[in-house]
Length: 240
Image (cartoon, rainbow, N blue to C red; front, side, top):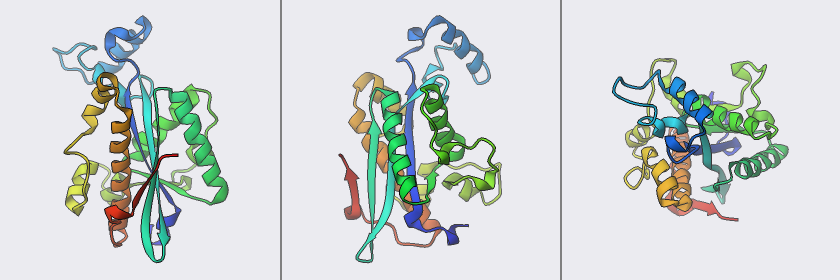
């Protein structure tokens, strides 16, 4: 499949999510009941719904998106560059609206594929669900209703690594380590995002971390295609 795909037709993506509230006690009473039911499947006997509320950000019904980072590869004078941009903030509806507008504008110019690590099971459906909750019309590429799996325009680096073994899963940082790709995991990891958001209130730090993950996904795709990695000097972060 990858042989027929141009690296210039891929929009790389990663999201960062957190629980919708800073702690379990901040939830409305009815959502406390819903979380108690939802968390019953993975709570240990000695754990309460409050003890596991830090995991609420993994579920679109109980979490929210605070950052979406996207990146593209382009070629200038036979040298590849990576351009990355982040949408982040406390207002999830505005964040998603801005991302949706960017995606629609991009789709109007060319046909693209969306690529993320574990995107099929997490990033893409999470974005779609949160858009629906906020009443935002889904861009066609995210609207999978009635589509066959082979009609979707998704690439998933975790899925590619399975090579047909659907029992196998691998983390992004493990793949990066295997391929010798630098990642931001030493400074920050996914388990720290909620605290950085709710306690430190440092969205800029989360945005930088998310952008590094997007770059990592792009570098992995290049490895799959047997191409050279993009050097750090050729990574451009778009701030406007």
